[in-house]
Length: 153
Image (cartoon, rainbow, N blue to C red; front, side):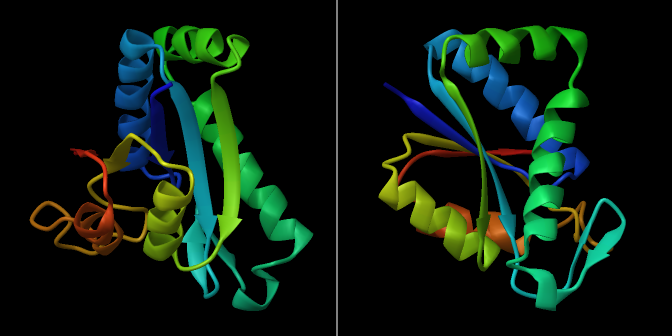
């Protein structure tokens, strides 16, 4: 079965990537995997700073899982209907892992033999030049993934 990985971070870019991945999964009857990676350093998630000392704590795991739930909750009604069908068929997973974001994503791609990645062109911590450059995580995933990667603006 085709496995589609969607790394998400709460940004508009990752929400649009998730919407595209839902379409593709619907067309191909693929298994859809949403992945949020908790970092080992200070980061910004939905305007809340997560202290690096808490990166492995239950609190940040809960925040990460809430981010995954919020990503689905913020979809359009049509997208929610499609993801509900995928989920009801047992073809959806939501995962939260800890580590350096790009490395964790590419390691997961290799370990789980992911067939296709759909990722936002920028993340939640994108700089001022976001319209000009592809983000550093996306760039690393593009260069290290063994499978096709769809980058969504």
